[in-house]
Structure formats: structure tokens, C-alpha cells
Amino acid sequence: MGQYSAPYALRCGKMGTGAMKSAVIIPTGDEVKNGIVLDTDSPEILAQLIRQFPEMKVVRLGPLTDDEEAILTLLQETVLESPDLIVLVGGSGGGHRFSPSLGKDYTQSALEKFLIEKAASEIYGKNGHLWCKLICGKKDKTVIINVPGPFYEAKAAMSAFLNSYAAGMDLSQINKEMAQAVYDQYPRGEE
Image (cartoon, rainbow, N blue to C red):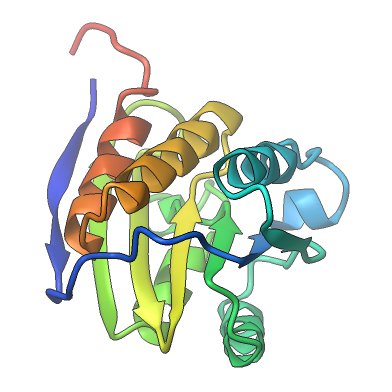
């Protein structure tokens, strides 16, 4: 079984409980960009957003490679358009920092650099990630979150985000709810 560490956060007010009007979904990962792995997460996230906010305009951008500078550049460009929400899919791991045999993920490190107002949780487990970092924050008026790439984890994290956002929770509380939802997807076994 894994564990997750409590989020650290720069405190901010509660999130708005009003309807979000626009969102951008950005899948990441060389395996998605190169067509090795089918992006099933974006359609699920889109469906959840539309169920919660039926009038929402949602744009899914083309997949990004696992490159921190590319992610930072696209975040900067996207925030200028002032969407209410940006969801980055995948790249929450960082296993390459622990083992050179694991893939390189940079979404979480790009978000760390990009966001000042943020909350983050680290999850450790035996689900193939070994380590996962979820971050949610704000840049100007845009809420930005990342969700892990595995489908059930992405689905759970997005659902937890929408529920906690609707409840008016602050970034730290939202992040904690998202991390717990992802952690609950991890396989349970003997230690």
C-alpha cells in the first residue's frame, strides 16, 4: 500500500461556486503524442465538465511531449486567453528521478515553476507510478490542475476536483480531496 503526504499550500480564499464557462484540456506524454497510448482521459474529463457545467466551452489541445519548457510555454500562452480552468493530463509522475528505467514526466515540475498560488500533494505507492504529485493553483483568474494519466486515477481526480470546487473549498482542500481520490485508486496489498 502507498501513502500520500498532506498538501502544502499558499493560502487563498475559497474557490468560486459559480459556473465555470471555459476550460482547456491538455494531455501530455510522449506515449500519447506518438499514438502508443490512446488518450481516454480527455473524453472522460470533457464529459464530467459538461455534466457539471452544461454551457461550458471546452477545448482539448493536441498532446504535448514530456518537455518542461514546452509545457511552460503552452501554459503561458493558454492563460493569456483567460479560461476558467486548465486541466493537464498525465506527467504527474517523476519516477525518472528515482530510477533511470522509468519515463520522464514534467507536468508537475512545470506547474511548480509556473504557479505561485498553489497547493500540492505527493502520493507514494505500488501502482506503477512509485511517486505522483498533484498540484492545483491559480494564475490570474485561471484555475490550473493536473491529473494522473491512468484512466481511473484521472477520472477520480477530476470528479474530486469538481465536487470540492462546487463546495467552495480553497486550493488546499481541493488538492487534498483530489489526492485522496487518486490514492483510493491505488491497489491494496500486503506491505
